[in-house]
Amino acid sequence: MDKPLVSVIIAAYNAEQYIEETLNSILDQTYSELEIIVVDDGSTDRTAEIVNAFHPRVRYVFQQNSGSCASPRNHGLALAKGTYLTFFDADDIMLPQKIEHQVREMEANPGAALCVINYCNFTGSSRSSDHFSSCPSLSLYTDNLNTPSFELSTLESRNILIDENFTIASSPLFRSEYVRQQGGFDTTLKACEDFHLIYRVAANGAMVVMPEIGFERRLHDTNMSADSERMLRNLILSRQSLATDETDPDLKRRLQKRVLRYQRDLQTCLINKGQLRSAAKLYRETFPPRSLSDLNHDFRQGIKLTLRRASSNRS
Image (cartoon, rainbow, N blue to C red; front, side, top):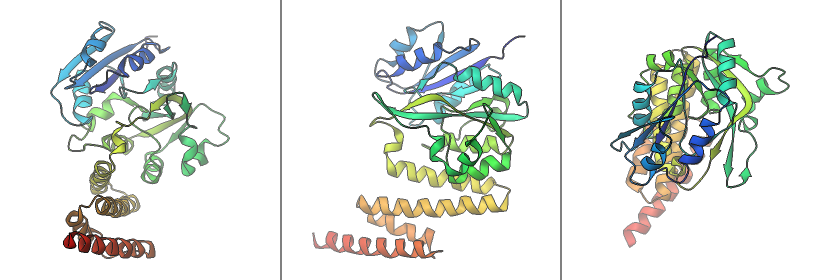
């Protein structure tokens, strides 16, 4: 029986430090039917030279810098021929059986739109515990599990995802048709585009979840998640977009509640950075406070904002 083709799409930008190790980890997969596409998002370092050294096993494509991962991933999607798709970050490490095991579980669950797998973070030689163990709601399913995977309905997966973002870009194996139906990644998002796509795909089909660790996520100073303002602005935009399209009233309400929480977090971030006018504007979005916690936050940040303004006027 022929194995289905899996397209591995890697968005790379100035990735010379890690891309060789990442590609070797993919080429070492126990699953052989792979199409590997690297889309270079305008690198100015040795990324092209390193990736082209893997030709013909790896396809290299260049595009002008877009400023995010969404555009190069969509570029790769347009070229991909696989029955299944996985997007992988240019600095992560894929463990040898990740794709084989995910394909196996997807083939065994023909109604599933995607399969997500567990991971751990690492810095140098230091590894964290697995990510799923930090997700209480998901752990209700994974604790004492006697099978390699379990299936979440579309409602169950979205219900957990809102409060526990248990999967990231390098984790899912998608059935290609579902990603194409959704139009790929939203290029207006400069972060959180992976969560946004995963949630939209999960709204259209079941999700298979695998507690085994399938890859290692590298943490370093240039991770996009280190830019707190950028992350918060895109957390807000992505959840607003999902809330607009969400058809379940309870999930819509919870997404909107998340937006308000992130807006308050952004307000704190802006005050700490001295962007006082932008912080003050957010009060219009979050007023009135809806809980004692919201009231305490608004009161504390209001005092801080007033004191910073007074200090700025004196200087």
